[in-house]
Amino acid sequence: MMRLKALDNADDTSKDAYFKMYLEDAKNILLDRIYPFEHEIIEVPSRYQNWQLRAGIELYNQLGEEGIVSYGENGLSYSRKTDLLSEGLISELPPPRAKVIGGDAT
Image 1 (cartoon, rainbow, N blue to C red):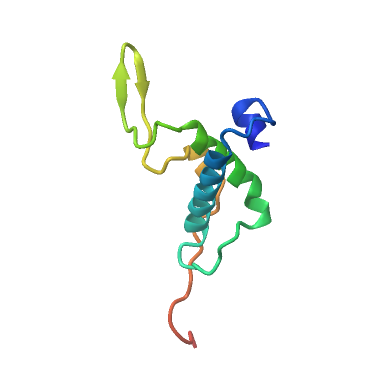
Image 2: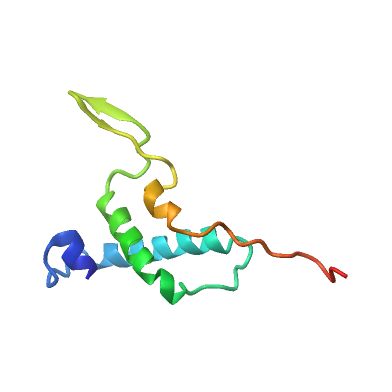
């Protein structure tokens, strides 16, 4: 599906290594955002797999533009935040979960 969305060709395997890398990046962004203190969670919950795919595609589409904060030339301008994903995509995630550190709360 990622090939079809990003390249308009499901049979083109030339960018598979990039796709895998960006899916892994999207997974890490998701897990760091939702579970910042629970490093034992290493798999994306099934309800977020579509989000991971869309985030991976968004990251892939930025290929070569990482780190652009502002750029302008001849009426063309770029601006990108350091989080690498659009606010719309990030806003779909729940707030980070807190974790109780330490012993007994009683």
